[in-house]
Image (cartoon, rainbow, N blue to C red; front, side):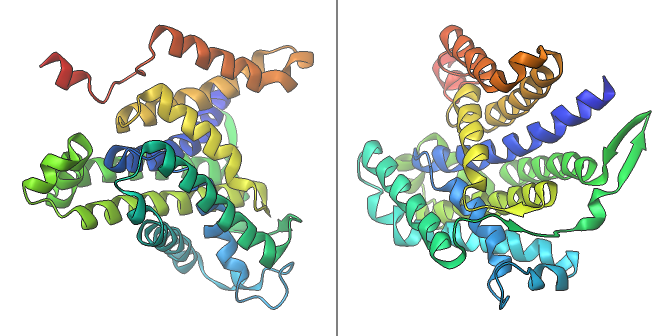
Length: 301
């Protein structure tokens, strides 16, 4: 049972970080950023650029971990901010459907840019190999990376919570998420708040890329798609615009996936995702506004 718990927390951490990145952007701009998955792939593929041979990851092996991690996080943040400046800023007053189509188009641009540089063939990579060593906790054996993923996710969530609640910029971001027009009239700097949200979202995408690349040992231009899909579902289940709801739903989806993989009959395990999505439908039937509605408190008042 302890092994199942660690597996659920590890997978849920990936989904929670992805859902948090999507919920941040939706809270400020009312935009579901479908290019988020491609930002995940781009962040870790950046390690290939200085290499003369795309199949031999020289750069990733040369950088120490204390430079490797900030590099990937900064690449994700910079790409996300660049997307906001070049594309999304032009569509701020457009309809939600137009912005959604723009996010799809931007995602395809990033994906085919990677395809042009590195082809569609997955690349083997040795990213932070020391984290693959097993550790034993109360009788459960798990890779060190899994434990670090859980601890790092908790630390990121706590740091982001303190940032949003204790800093002026975090307060401006929360105000913009509640009522963007009113926040601007009260002196909130719209461009700074939106770029800050995109930078945090991009850094979270870089963190997911590091974890995913270290776990699988391969790079694929489609690697962010599966995480993006589950993260978007978690955002909807948690309540669009609700950061706590997105995180909670991400962990619940991770737990549901692991539990079903363990307890379903062997013949039914290939259809695990169908059971997970069926549970999602049931949740939305009984609670269409999500587990934690972003507007619930305002409506009660």
